[in-house]
Amino acid sequence: MKLVSAIIKPHKLDDIREALSNIDVQGMTVTEVKGTGSQKGHKEVYRGAEFEVDFLLRTKVDIVVVDENVDRVVSTIRDAAITGNVGDGKIFVFKVENAVRIRTGETDREAFQLSIRDTT
Image (cartoon, rainbow, N blue to C red; front, side, top):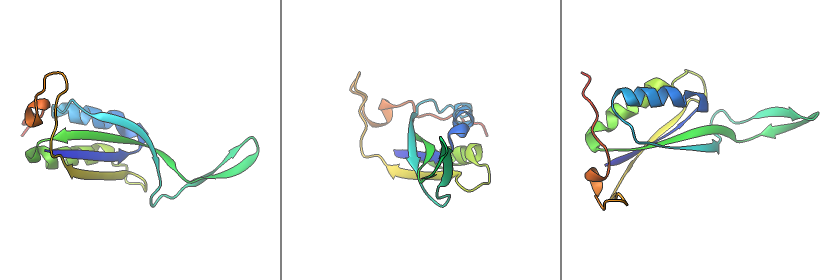
């Protein structure tokens, strides 16, 4: 199993959720985060005072998938998230050693709805 973790622009979340739903990926964790990258920051004015905003608001989407579905999930997220502008985000893939569903005690593959419908 793998954890696909995507840092995206917040306004792209609905597009990503819909695209993943179209391939039957339902479970995800979404977190509001702040970060900085090649986009750096920007200046804002608040009550007449100008200040530098170093960290930009982003959304983090985490999805656990079986190994054979990783490439499809990554490409689906990328296709839904891309704007072509600096700051579109990043996608990371991590190995998941173990997973346990608290309610039933199911482990690993059985702990998740991991099937993705074949649309090809």
